[in-house]
Length: 230
Image (cartoon, rainbow, N blue to C red; front, side, top):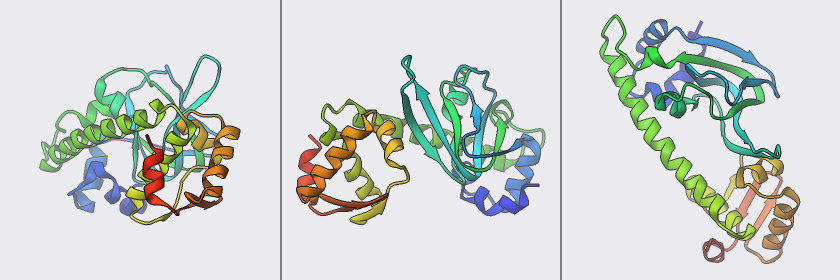
């Protein structure tokens, strides 16, 4: 069942340092549930009981939060080989803190966290490796969440956009990069108004800081962009 997705699973940080046969053996112990989904499908509902975390095999999912007024905030987007729900599962909350929805059709597997957090009946060494990997993943995710809060707490639209684009530039290592979100999703991610964000992007382009076409962005003036972050 999982062998066709072996290459994706080997990319997953949960299985770092493990061979394909070890991963497939682990999955037989963990007994995950595979689920197909279409774009727009709801995979997990905020407030619903949580006993699992997910790994994306194909397609893409978004973790979303809605405020009392119904405004959406995108916590993150996750593609093949990436995990979602592992932090809240590890914290033992028992409830999904956010909604998970499909932004592109695909497959996920849901793994019972209780089976991951304890050594399996075979007491295999690679299960211990997986547990150590999970600790590293949770710590790394905490840093990502902290960086995200740094974007949101900035006061002006330009500060948020400049900080986000500069971070994308550092991660990609090149002045031209793709942002894996459309304009509406990016506005939700930064917790800003889409029309206001689009106007500010236009001003930054006119001033020679950046250029863009759809999801492709180019940093034209790195120093000016750095200064605009604060």
